[in-house]
Image: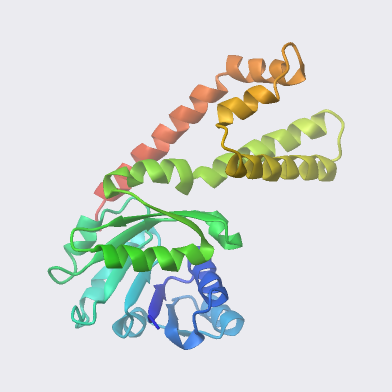
Length: 271
């Protein structure tokens, strides 16, 4: 069985642990590095995994998943680079840091060391994540296949060119926050119309779940499904007209461009 080290025990790291264990990976093949004692203690108790430092976690792992914030990744990969990394054993590094290109990480590692970059999103916490996998210069198809298998434990996986990952970050990486904002606004609107917050929340959340399920299961596009529930001169048409007049569609597009530009900027920022 592949030995996996998860460097960083935050929400992404925890979701990976839970998903991998549910998918049949054994505790003995998983190790975690988490610097904060209360969090490290929680992970050890909750999942039964060995929690240790970066060096020990990475040293004997086949797949080293670095799930830390972008501003921490240079330091962490620098620590990993001090190890006698074993290319004969086909070790590889997987980066979850948003906006950080593989070239920047490859420069810190031994020549030819395979790096795979992934962009997951937070629905992986409930097993419904959307992860995009991209190969660095030295990663081969077998590396992509293994990383895809790992992340399928927490949702769906696509493989794309790394040049598309800043756009992926803007659309799906940051995407859950956009939907949460829409839910927040719709709940507030429901309360303003006289519903209790609990009732409004239940109505909006289930509407979002049901709409997502329809999109996932139907061959129709979103524009066709929207048209199907928009009667001429009806209530839905009135709401959509108001949204368009307020510039909602353009605001969403501009927001995605802002997220994309920030992702690019993070990739250019070095330690």
